Structure formats: structure tokens, C-alpha cells
Length: 230
Image (spheres, rainbow, N blue to C red):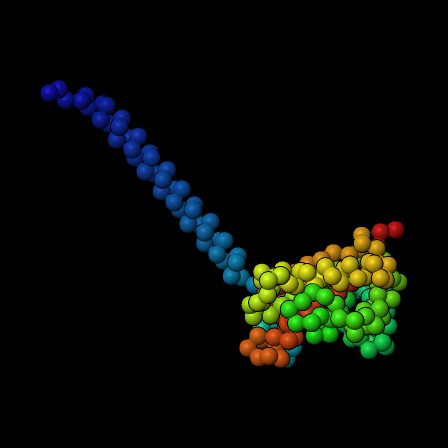
């Protein structure tokens, strides 16, 4: 059996050495990029504002003010500002004077209506007794050009009836019924309204008590924080 010429062996060995060196360089670069990315994720971002920080000392906490719900989610609660914010504050004052107490949040003016006030248990039919309350809200909506989102919420207790398969469907149907009422009875333009459903996945109170579950069964009328186009 003939042996391979020596110069071929040297050529093969040199090529292999070049490949090993190239692989080492790529591995080192990959490790470097991973380390830089991990450091960027862990390192807190600078605040950039003198007022940013925790009250009473402690490490600075950047970003906008927020509340943490029982499910661990953070919700922005800073009030709207500017021209749009002023209009929403005026609407809030009117609603407060009518016994309705909405909250100003980053997303807009939020009117939270408990299920027990609007609907019978397990149904999407709006109770006749809720009409005066909805009428007072509709009168304020008619004076604003802002878009409005109707957000349905439920508790995690499974629903047991033949009409709705789960709490998602029930909370969405309740929002839709409210939309139909606002348009047909009170003349709110359909183009301003939208419907959303969170089911049981955005609670405002713990679900381990009957009182907490009752607070989570609600529909929110959200007057969006926006500046109307001129």
C-alpha cells in the first residue's frame, strides 16, 4: 500500500489548524456577546429624572408610577396630562358630582361597574335598574370626542349554563350588550366604541374570597386618553 506524499499530509494538517483557530475565535465571540447581553438585562436603566426613586430612600425605581395587582402584573396609574388630560379631569369631576367615581389612569378615565349592578348572575342581559346609572355616564360620553373601550372582566369560577362556554364568552357578551345599549338608546356613535374581554385574567382583587371575586366581575368603560384630530 502506497503512502501519501508528505507534502499532502502537511497541507491537510495546516488546513485543520486553520479551522480550529477559526472555531475558537467564533466561540470566544459568542461567549462575549452572551455576557454583554446578560449584563444589559440585569443592569438597571438610569432614571434620567431627579424625582425618580422610591419614597423614603432605597434604590431608584425607573419608569412611570404603577400599582401591582394580585396576579403580579403592574398597571400604570399616572394620570393623563395636557389638553386630553384636562378634558378627562373635567369629565371625572362631572361624574363624581353624579355619584360615580372613576379613576384617572394612563390609558384614560376608567369607570368600573360591578357585575351585580349591571347584570343578573351568569347573564349578559342588562338589568332595568342599571339604566339610570348608564344614562348618567352616557350623557358625559356624548360631550367628549374620545374613543371608548368597553372591557369585560370575570372571576375564575367556571360558568355553568348552556349559553356561554366559559368566562371569556360571558365577559365579552356583557361588553357587547353594553355597546348595543349605548348606541341604540343613548346615541353614542358606534365608530367611537370598541369591545374587549380579559375573562378572569386581569383581577383587581384576590379571588380567594367572595368579596374579591365580586370586585373582579365587572365591566370597565374606558374613555381613552387621546387628543382628537383637528
